Length: 324
Ligand SMILES: Nc1ncnc2c1ncn2[C@@H]1O[C@H](COP(=O)(O)OP(=O)(O)OP(=O)(O)O)[C@@H](O)[C@H]1O
Image (cartoon, rainbow, N blue to C red; front, side, top):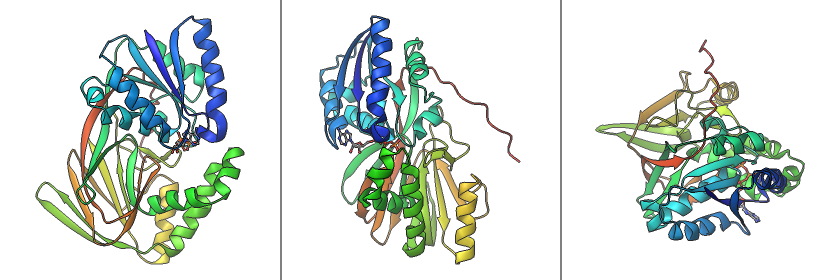
């Protein structure tokens, strides 16, 4: 087996580098054949992967290992699927998480201990198809894939403001990036206006005049381990769209509390749509985020569907807690 390894050295506030040192020592000790490739700039992982995918001939003895956060994994999968050859022969992926959130790792069942995650890859005898989300933006005529979630409104505005804030880098260096999100979330709560959202599923349409949170999830977790779609499983070809409307301040704070307590999705404030095809539109410019990467401020006309991607990694899933 040959391992091509994409490493984002700055993921997790620099944890990418130390994770790579640990993994490299283990690969050398086991005398495995590998090629390391480091991301050098913001879009680095996408282009590195496109080039790799163009050259990949579909040999079964090749695996692509990704060392980074959710954003790096997002760029890698989109890089492969942007290559024509990559779409025909997608390179099986194994993932070693070292970001700040690591939500995909939770959803799939990958250890955050680099050596355990590596062994989950080395021990896998076959590849496993994993559901990923696909989106088509009819206004921008843009396509892409997501492994975690695609949000518009609240969570996307938080991502956008956090990335723009100067404190993020300082906090990231101290491995305290989550605090930066919390402070920006309070600001967004204060001044984000609700918006009109139309959701269409098959022949049913539903209008939400005061939409606030709109998150399409591929697995249960968001924001570093909060369950927002508790019933989703990466092995099932479904997405779940959660819509929450904005009411008065008291209810808004209550919905935030429910979110933090991981009870929002099952509360009476949640509208949930589960399926393989969903379509939704807004009538105003709204922020978007996909797997924590900014989509910018845009009018939304999104069609969501599912696809599948091969992973070569043993899943270590925790047993589900009983629902109270
Ligand atoms: N060499 C590099 N220099 C600067 N930025 C980089 C480099 N390589 C990748 N990036 C940036 O890193 C971002 C991805 O980081 P990633 O999401 O993997 O880690 P994280 O933000 O720490 O973790 P998480 O998404 O799990 O919270 C990409 O958006 C890209 O812009």
